[in-house]
Length: 216
Ligand SMILES: Nc1nc2c(ncn2[C@@H]2O[C@H](COP(=O)(O)OP(=O)(O)OP(=O)(O)O)[C@@H](O)[C@H]2O)c(=O)[nH]1
Ligand SMILES: [Mg+2]
Image (cartoon, rainbow, N blue to C red; front, top):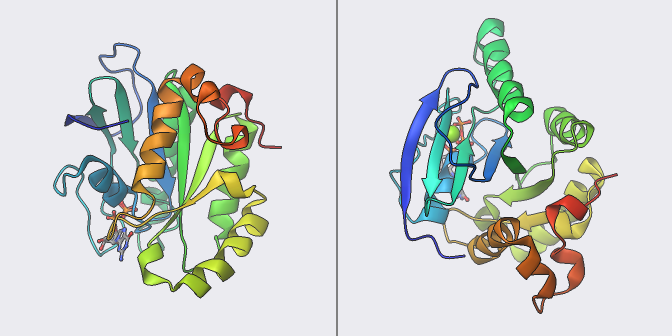
C-alpha cells in the first residue's frame, strides 16, 4: 500500500469507544524505547506525527492515527520501563490490555523487539498474551541499522527461539534507514485486502489472510 494521508485522531487515557467507521486497526506493542512511535513516523514519512524520545516512557496514552482514512494505527505506551512507579506501570498495563482486549477492530499487533537484544520476559509474556486472546501478530525487529549483517544473522535465531515464532513472522526494521518499510507496507496492505494477498505472486506462506494464521 501507499500512504498518502496520515493524521492524528485522538489520545485516550483508557480504552473506550471513539468515533469509528469500522476501519481495521493495527497496534504497536513493545518495550519502552523500542521504537513504536518512530515506526509510525517512518511508515508515514512524517517525523512529527507521533512523539518520540531517546528517553524511555515517552508515549503515555493510547494514540490513534488515521491512515488514508482506511486504517488506524495505534501507538501504545511501552512496558518494562523500570523507572516509573508501580502505580504508573499498572496504569500503562491497564491501557495496553484494555485496548488489546477491548477493541473490536484490532486486526493485527506488531510486537516490536530491539534486534540488538534477546527478547525480554515481558516480550515473551506479550506474545503469549496475544496467542491467548487469538490476536494475530507480527514481530518487528527494530533498530536493525545498529547491527552488522553478521550480527543480524545471529540475532534472528535468538528472536525465533525466545518468542517461539517462525521466520515469516519476524521482520527486521529500521526507522533510521527505512529497512523493512516496503515489506511492512506490503504486510499492512495484505491485512487490509487479504483476498488480493492470496492471489499475489509472493510465496503463499507469507501472505495468508491473518484469520488463517495459527500462532500455536
Ligand atoms: N538507530 C535507530 N534508532 C531508533 C530506531 N527506532 C527508534 N529509534 C530511537 O529510539 C528512541 C526511542 O524511539 P521511540 O519511537 O520514542 O520508542 P517508543 O517505543 O515509542 O518508546 P515509548 O513511547 O517510550 O514506549 C528514539 O531516540 C528513536 O530515535 C531505529 O530503527 N534505529
Ligand atoms: Mg512511543
